[in-house]
Length: 306
Image (cartoon, rainbow, N blue to C red; front, top):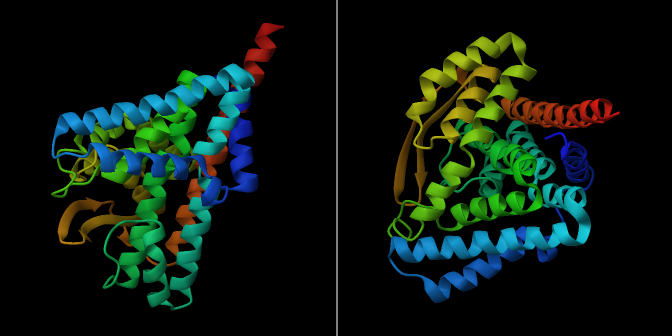
């Protein structure tokens, strides 16, 4: 972290200031398009084919990171990679837009916009169900699109950041438990679990750290409830958000014809429309806290080096 701290803080600052580039030139979107084209050529109902697909995608992304590091140097490439992989501003803006629709009583509009954040079926969701879906998305993506890029930047610079982003993108593309992807997407889904295992727990610690009065509750709820969730990482961060915000998350979700029970996380009341803005504020606080930690590590290293 010390060597990369300033680069990480700059990358986060760029994302906060400018947000996501247009989809037509977004590197993650272009990567997804390329991997979709590759999937059409190599798809087969096989774990081996899916594993090869995953290796090619992650390897290509890491190779781009290596090239960036050669061109821009370690710190420059790390800053660029973190800025490209982070999405805190976009996540908060989209979540608040849906939350505002709920607060204004526009449930239909909120349902229509919800697919921008989650993949679950939204047509018959209640106001509370939509609010819960948004907050759960903010929690999970706080790991995928904020904490994980920073953790991997500290571990391995740009190649590690872009490799993680590739893993996360491939999991979103093919890591589904349905007839088409049960075997082909297995490797991408399992690798995503591994890549986010440490960041999810770092995120839970940050949630407790920025809300110290609820820290003990966060620890208790994470320890008790996270295992109820089918994801080893999603359960940790969703339980942490639920405990910090004193609400209840989890339950039954429908994805097309597939129904999934995610357990009950937290002891509070069901999420309401007004809780969406509180969840985004929590995301902002943990992002800021990690940026401050990165800068502090740089300052400490600089002082010690004198």
